[in-house]
Image 1 (spheres, one colour):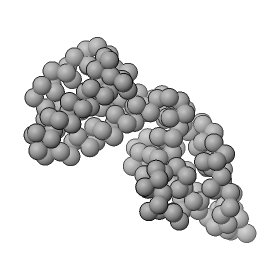
Image 2 (spheres, one colour):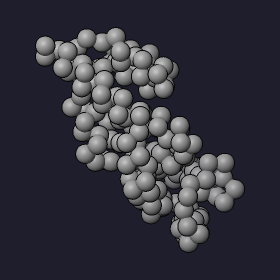
Image 3 (cartoon, rainbow, N blue to C red):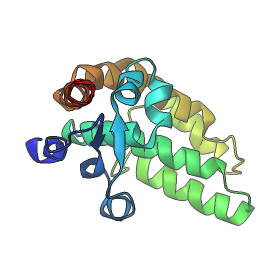
Length: 174
């Protein structure tokens, strides 16, 4: 944790370097990325605000990994990608991959959904459409919003990030 947030300790302006939460490819392209206190504060306002900010999403993913529940956000992201597919063949392939990885009862990263939703999703994916995963995605989103999101806002990851960005804002104003 200290290593991940240590990137914030050497900044003297109102923003923080957020590269430690990024994948190596993202980090290389955004080495000098800054994150404001206002941005971090907005994440606590709504789950949508968190997910729509790529750095908020990165922090949330990091948090979920510490809780060993990152399958939920990975599933939600896979569904977002799935919705963008136009080719029926690619849609069928992606639907099958998502089902095998997240929905199937023996999936390696099985999401927590009820039996009825699992079976209805299985039937919908026999002839996939862009909306085939909407119901199950909404259930996983709701689970994260009601369960994981409040824990993230109370987590040391978020609180440390918020505190550090507040300190940098205060330093700049002095």
